[in-house]
Image (cartoon, rainbow, N blue to C red; front, side):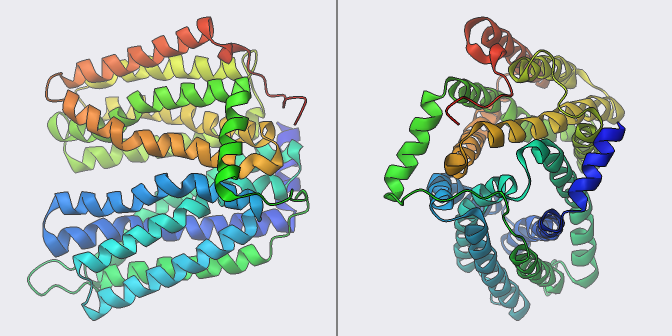
Length: 425
């Protein structure tokens, strides 16, 4: 315990890590303002939930399509330069959106185009952001640094929506026949300023652990080389396929079935807010456990992942049987703790496993798996709920996750995946 506290203190005394963490907090807070303001702007402008969903999809589609290209460019240049460019682009896009809203010219086509551009920019910022930390801290500090970074982001994600909702409510949410949308415009303006401020903090970050770049190669060939690298590394290939399969089944259950549970069984939107808030608090607690337990493993990394998935599967099964909000919140709290701890472990494992020259591409492949399966999983879950009950859906998802973990233990190398990087790395 004392050693972990000393390690955290040593990290926080490093100026580069402090500047990077400050920028991460600012960006995460700002992002929450847009995540609340954008769907609300479309909803009050059109009154059509379908159009709101389409605009949100416009942000996710280019991100999923171009994130592999973004990873290749991160490896060719540097995560810092790509992240800096994306921050300046987002500053301009959000400032433009804020000005249009405040001036009353934010039509649906204009909002859609800007949402598409914001999603395109994030295809480059995500692999850059997830690849930068190993260039700032030493390999032995990665798990501790990831825990701190993810923890402060989680706090921002808890506080951001509350601040955004309060701002929009106080200054105008665009409702009514002639309702002022000043609060929505202000939310976009704050997010724009957050990108500009975080770009300044990023400019202060040095990369003491950066490695020399290899000779540049064509971008598409670089993307292919990243996919080939992941495929030829047995541990990486096994983990990526396993995570993709689990995300396809469980992701839709969490995105679609939880709101249905809140609306049909519990007490509406307030219950959903409680459940998700408790889950977020659990995730934060799980990330904080990294600072207490360090690199705790049951046998090795792969076995720990499978064991945690078995426990999450067991917790999913009774979710469809709850009759009160506190029951669902209790289950989601434990799921959040397990997920938060493993999130730090997975990111740290990837950052140490992958050769630094390929890290941007590997992280983009990892994110592409989840972003690609998310809409398919949500659509499948919505279709299944026409034919099965919530109890059957949650029970089936839990049993699938447990069975997949067991089969991965018996039939794949997943159970033998260690924290040690491969010899050639």
